[in-house]
Image (cartoon, rainbow, N blue to C red; front, side, top):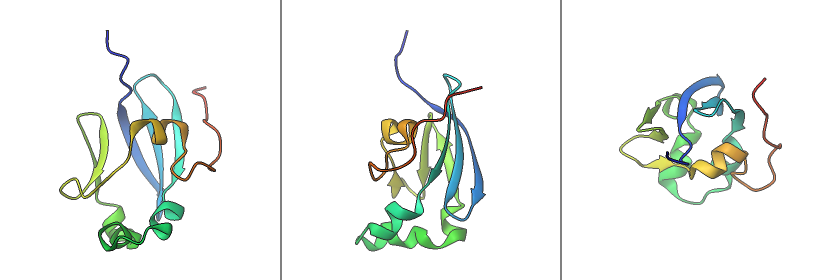
Amino acid sequence: MSDAINVVEATLVADHVLAIRFDDGAHQVVDFKPFLSSSRHPQIRAYLDPARFAEFRIEYGELIWGDHELGFPMIDLYQNTLLHHCPPTVEAA
C-alpha cells in the first residue's frame, strides 16, 4: 500500500484559486496568487495571467501547468502551505 497522496480533482474557483480534492478525501482551497506574486522568476510570474493559470491539469496525481513549468510539492498543496502562512487544512466533511 502506498502512502502517497494524489490530487484527484481541481476546480478553478477564482483567478488564482483552486479547490483541490485528494484521494484520501481531504479538500483544500488554495490561493496561488501570493506565491506567484512573490516570485522573481519570469516563467513563474507568467502564471499571474489568469488565462494561463487556468490551463492546469492533473497528471499522475500531480497538479501541473505547461510542460511541467509550474508545479508544487504535494505536501504544500495538501497542507495549504505554499508560503507557510496560509489557512490550515480543511478536513473532508
